[in-house]
Length: 466
Image (cartoon, rainbow, N blue to C red; front, side, top):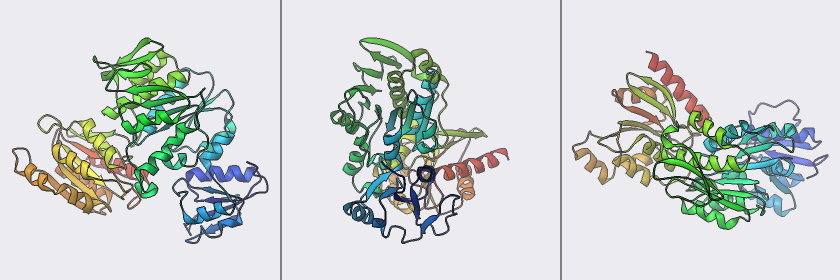
């Protein structure tokens, strides 16, 4: 794509597009930043601005438009501009065009960041060339584009937003669990899946696809690629890839040879879904050049990422866990199951849940909550009432009339984080777990999921010292 002297619009000046904007200016493009925020602080080097509610008007004034990942391709103004011949692109799409090195991409509904980070760590120990990690995980790919050399490798965490308009696929594509997410954006599960499929759709015969065999939707991705398929599973043995055997050992099977990686008890990460992430990372990193010895070392010492089932503190025998990156009901279900759901045996859980809707269905989450070792749910944000209605069904009365401890629901609405944490603390007894796993987006009360998680951690640490 020729950029010099082209009239270019950047829609939305988020973290990813900030790096893109500076790259475009450096490349000689005439850049205009269009953003809904009227009070956006003007960044040095950007001369042209279109702030406010009319920021999407007259996109036909430009030769090229770069959308922010959160702005759908179906947006009427974008559709109109495309019909008029304006090139519609994105930071991720341009990065794929310009990146001189091979790309390893990871997508899925849950676990992308953990899996991508594991892969990077495994490869760093094995490679002489540089390994770059970026994408949806928080580091914009354009922030390191100019440092990449052909012999390097780029690991990208890719969301459905970033994959939606891709016309190239990674050399190694990893497909984790694909359920349903961002239905407020994609409008349907089929639209969400179609966007995800781009991670394998443009692969060549020389490429590799690493696919989760345990989910039917993920399994079907194999039919969309020309690349060589390797599988991973936590439920069954497979011929080519990575799996957990009957002895609860992680096995890498390549060319009819089995390599024992470790026992699943050696893994420090919480939850069954993280066993899937480990298996995916093992086969993907091996295909990218990691050696078995280093794969084993990293698995045994990797403790996970911030805001993902992160143990924040233990005080008075009460454990506080930050899972703020849980933004769907499915991810909260995974967090609950990671802690154990047997009412008789598992630690009792105080769940903090709620936020802004992304269009998901919370019926199954309500059912899991009522059948689990959760003894109290603290609901917050825009979805608090809707989730409460889902929970307060006939099973709620059955649970409260049973011989088990009575189940409580507290709706705090848009309360401050201090009140939320203090309420959870009051509900807790020694041996309990306070689980902050919202299962919703954060934008009704917080800047983003990271801000939400940081606030929770800061207040927990202050209260746990008292």
